[in-house]
Length: 189
Image (cartoon, rainbow, N blue to C red; front, top):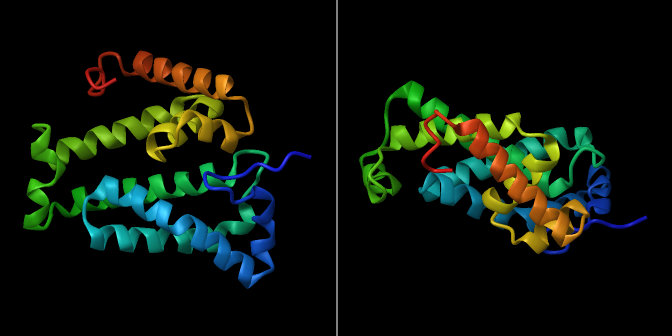
């Protein structure tokens, strides 16, 4: 049996130990916390929000750890998907409230000439398109671009060759481009 390891060497086979061992759970959280925090911070732009969302992610991980199924996805893919969903929920709740702190106004929106609301709409549209992809492409694209992994790391996480990982990423991007035609993401993809 091949042991699949996460980005920096945390074996997926140890995830099941975290269900019964506080020490293994602490090790698991300690391994992924900085990566998830960084991932979220890049998407929300505020330290306070990133800290809050990281806490939410790990609360969900701890509560749902028994539902993790390594036959469907690697643990790394699973936890990053939870993080992506938390970021999406964060932006959706902000749009419902129609409020944003003043210091958020200058963050990423003005650098590229789009508002925070437009950025949020694009983010949600991209996540919706990702959900439509076949699982093998969705996982590869998510790990490559949302988790900032190199192709080799994607391959290692998914337990496939680097060539296969590269093909999955490329085919996933082609599929995203195809599905985005005529939509708000067409220019970006």
